[in-house]
Image 1 (tube, rainbow, N blue to C red):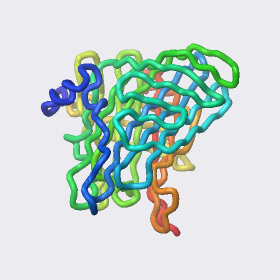
Image 2: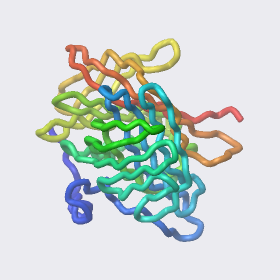
Image 3: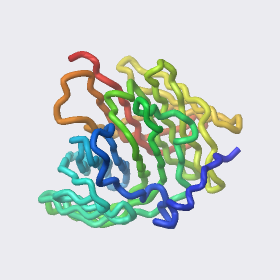
Image 4: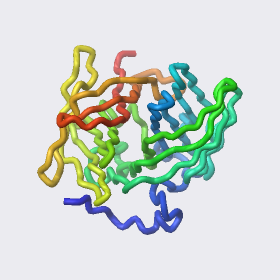
Length: 305
C-alpha cells in the first residue's frame, strides 16, 4: 500500500524536481506570533573518500535561533562551521550559500567547493502520520524528506577531493520551539541499493509515542506504521525494527557509528528546559545481510537547570 500524498502540485510549480523541499523561507511575521522556523537538513556520506557529515540551515523572522552549519569529517579530520543566517529566500551565510534547490557553494578559509544535489526516488511526507508534535495551539509542522546524491569538488586545507556522496535532505516549516514541543524522539534514515527507509518516533507532550516515515522504492512510498528500538547500555539503538502499512517488516540489526556530532537547534542561552540533538552517520546491515549507510538523531529535552 503506497502512501497517499495530498495535492502537492503548488510546490512543484516552484520547482519540478524538489517540490516541497524547495519551499520558500518566511521573512516576515505578525507581531506577537509564536516562534516560526524554517529548517533544512542535509546528511551525506561518501565511504570511499571517508567523508561524512551534515548541513543544517535554520532561519526565523521572530526567534533568535538562526544558523547555517556544516559539520564534516574528512578522513578523520573534523570541521564544524556555524554561522549566522538571515531569513531570506536564498540561504547565504558568511561562507555557505544554498539556493534551496540543487546548488551549495562553500567559501570557508579551510574548506571550499561547489556541490550539486541530484534527487533520487520520491520524497516522504511526514504530515499524514501525525508523528511530529505541534506547537501548542498551532497547526502541525510541514516536514518532507527526499533521498539524493551530492557530487562536486572540495578543497580541504589545500587537499583536493572529488565527492560522490549519498544522503538525503529535509525541509520543515511552521510554528516551532523544540524545547517546548519535542520531549524526546528517535530518528533514522537508511539507504540501501534498492530502497531507502526513514522513521521518526516522537514522544508527544501527552505522553504518547507516535511513529511516522516511509519505505521508498522506485515504485513509491509505503508508510511506517510502527517502529521498535532496542538500546545498548549507553542508550544508543542497537536495532531498529520497522512495521509497514502493507504488513511487511524490516529489521536493521547492525548500526555501527562512523561519525557523530551535535546539531544545535535552540537559543544561544536558555534558562530552563532545553532541547538537545545528537547525530550519527552509521554503517548499517539488515537481518538478511544487506549493507547500507544512514544517519540517526537522538533528540531530547534536558530538564535539569
